[in-house]
Length: 588
Image (cartoon, rainbow, N blue to C red; front, top):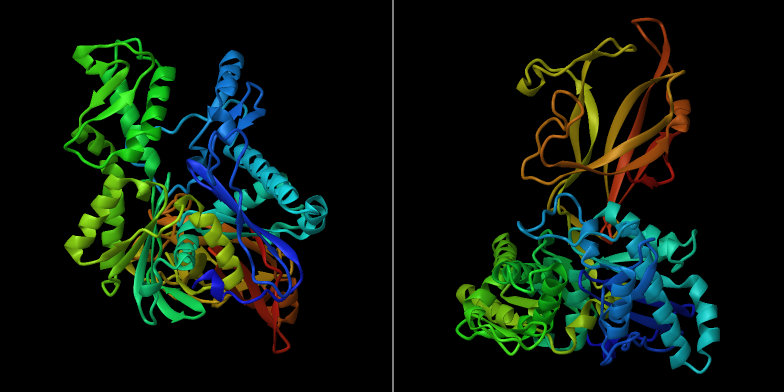
């Protein structure tokens, strides 16, 4: 869908900003929506201290020993700031986004994340960097428009913020990012609902559609796969095209996320340099870091042929024939350079194979975007994979560093993805009647209910949303339950919502001890609700065991998986009318 086909905006004038904080680079776009005018996307095209104006800026901050941020983005590459940092023992925070990753996404073996600066947490860094980005958006608007300051002051209080996340990020990560956005004053304390989330892959496919470079691929009933090769993650999503004008997409399989992005290439290179230069004047942390930075800026971007060597700039102009160093440049064989890329390429190819083979063999077209996809060597390897399986590959024209930020704006305005696929099984823990005929219950602890006298077992799994279930719009998935509740029992409940990430869920959630989750289960969040009104509406029961008054209270748990977030609420009947509890989600 070309931006030329977007219709004039109808509604109240407002500002929407999209921020794509990547593991290695960040980009930001914004759109001032004006009634009657076709929305126009604008980008931050120049950041402080950039030698050459660029839409992307390093996701890097310098901190002092007290945990105060001292330099951001391209400022950390400025020679004067680097000298100041060395004089004052500032510590660089980089690749920090990966500290937020969910536990179920393991790092590639051997990847060493740089330690966070002292007296800081990843939440602090998110907050500081979002505050920095917000200031740049504000300054850009103030400089670009004649009444920029007034425009900002008018639109800022109702500003909508779209933040991008990898496919694997979930409610806990989004909650922390939302809190950071509030602390950074992108929105006020009551404006959390104005912070929305879109996956980087979804934003990227909408960017690709907007460029017009894949227009021939967007046909009714067509199937495509989007592969976003970022700095930290590889995000892969398969789509079926349900409509082309306006564009309507449906996920055809659960999105995948792999921690195999471009930082792994740099990490492999750093390990190689450390081993090769041991015992030399470059055998120290600072020198290896500078050499790796030189590799990132040069050979990493240009490498394309394993049969040809690359030359990596070291400090100084010395010669060392034994180490292959001539005038301060170290010769590295093409085979060694190719080995740096191998873990990431394997992650990309394995992910594409999974997406293609997992019910998507109809997809004969793959769109790749992201910084790592800009590598000629990575692109050639993906082309070879495509040739082997008979799939066409497209890398959309235009600066891919802006792909996700601009695509996030398109996502917010156009609502192009009309259906998604559940990544996992989602459900809750329940109790159930003991059944001697069920082998799994044989050794489980049994509890006799004080009201009905029957034996129950706890920690049973109740699935509410099944993996690969089609999710359209704000569709709710529901399941009903009951609890015997006495007059003196508490009415407030905090019900954990769990995901099961493996293939076939067992009958129980916990091991026999009732404390350790069985492999595959993870608590995502909890929904809080009060059943006092449901209790009041239920008929009175008298226990045959002890004569106590109690009620069998029926209620329903509703789950909604929309915009990458899990939301939940409870309901019950009052005089035949469905009554809903306010949805209060908490995270631990």
